[in-house]
Image (cartoon, rainbow, N blue to C red; front, side, top):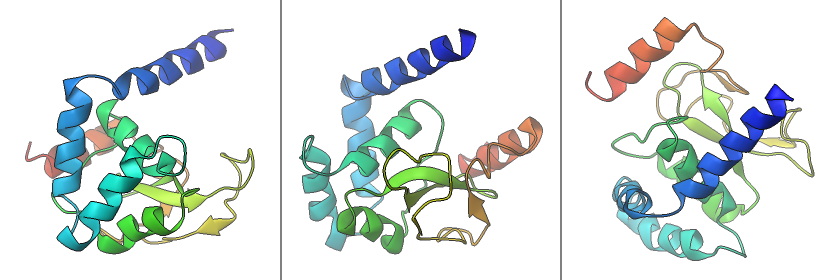
Length: 152
């Protein structure tokens, strides 16, 4: 029962994340981190709440809830995956920097092997990617890496 309640709390945080000034501020910072040539396409995809854009919105939700971070610049190849594949989801992460990494999972297979792995190495830092690759590291190591990314 406790696992179910934790999952419900997590889902509630995701739904709340898309409301209010925090979301709008993050959306603007997110767009600023994207190359100018891709920015317009990404803004359009983010506005499509019923037809695409789920992966990008999920990534923003992860950032709002503290489950991912926003680097100063986003690799264009990473962003292009979300533009080209509306079913790509940020379900993997980089073991070294914690960057959310998109995969294509197929129907109802979020925790198994993805149908398509776009980046076996992180396009930001070159680290190994995978399901819970960053979050399975010891907590002190996570804090050290995240602190270095935000200048702490």
